[in-house]
Length: 471
Image (tube, rainbow, N blue to C red; front, side, top):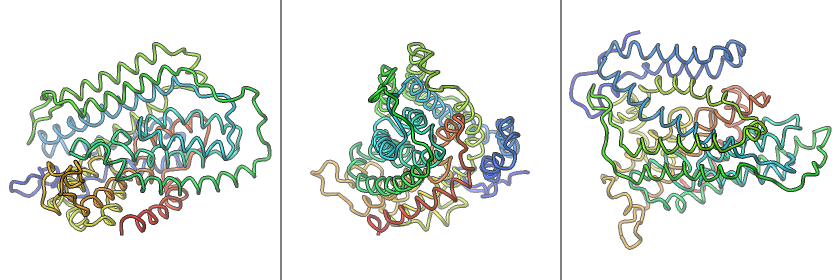
């Protein structure tokens, strides 16, 4: 296919943002491949998923480059250098370090044990990130429930709570909140602003899980005997220091203001990387390598550690990041792009919550958050520098704006909560799925997850959150 030349005329949206919506067809095909191939042709998918992802990436990249070599090259380099590589480094670091922490002992997958593990992980996610908490706790949870015939629901609710909703209380919890922190949202406003929403959503989801898990537990024909090991033991605990190192690197990257390095000068803008980003990546890589060197191989083997899940994520998300370029550019173009009608129609907390959430379930939730964050500022006709004052920080300022507070609460909650709607809504979702499948659990397909689990469980919860907080 060939991409049409956008209309003439200067625009801040840039030529890529003016592409038609159908330029995102390869992205849709990538998602459909992830959804359908494991269901319709599982053996083919298992052997060739990397080739399928590469095929759709090329279906977009080749005509994209032919249409406008400079802009296309710049966009591809930009998303790979600025987004994909740091994404993969962070995921690799957390996966590697968490794989060196073994949590064992008398953990048997009874409803009370599962509820406590999910509750602990939900709050832990806000402090070491949803990815960090998911990687630390998914293997212990799988081991605790390995004796059960019904395990799928445990993994799914793990994704709901620990990989998504739990990351709501600090900017460390989830990428969009960290992006908000970089754009003026005070660090602890997130805790104060989203705590009621997070508690409501978490407790409702946890209550549903407790009922489902209790019913399925009672159907088990055999119950596990006590192991005799007593209590809970943690090995490889020194890896916790490396996790703190990763979190520190993330905070450091948002605090330092170092010079920028130009990576590429093509297209409408050069591709530049702030040095603090490279410093962050270097620290994360160092923490991962130190974990590999200082953790006994036998401990990782006890954890069932392998590189297969991270390899699957690396290949599939490389294809996703390339094909998602036009979708994100169109969204960022706002009133000038093909989604102008959608962006222009979103005003007020109810619409902000559902629009941000719906797009975050299928697109990258960080740029989705930023798009509607800027839209909320635009509604008030104010600048980013005024954000702390609008949120009441410091408290001595009289510029607190309840309208903006409610809008930002809705945008933040939508971006974080609704990442749980699909496997690709947030980075750890797919990682958890891959680890569970490697452990022998038959996870539902992309649409099976959406139709059978996330929609029936989460949508009513989100309706309750809307009625309580966003009317």
